[in-house]
Length: 162
Image (cartoon, rainbow, N blue to C red; front, side, top):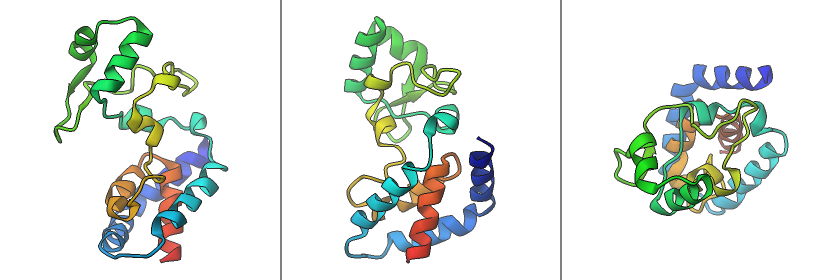
């Protein structure tokens, strides 16, 4: 865990530089970029155990879509409206809903997720380095790297490769 904290501290100290480089790369059109980043994702996540960190759940929280809310409420036995009223607010981007307060109420003490099988899509996709057109999302990855050691390591690999 201390290793992950050290990576996050390094990421935060280099944030301006990482952001500048990711912004620059996001404007380019590199052929085969998705495949390369997907490979970096596999490599990094074979070394990093999210359950030893949990910073994303404590500091970022997911975007909840309506389908996520329905599935979660069915699992926890709570009315959709009651769940939304007590835990969620409209995402400022208008994409869905976000948690009213952090950390995520579904994060257990051991950094596991109490609704892992029904977790929101944005949780299962985080840090979004397996998505399509990742090159256009590099600024978001740079922001995520402040809270996710894996995102930071992937940023490092992207910067070194380009």
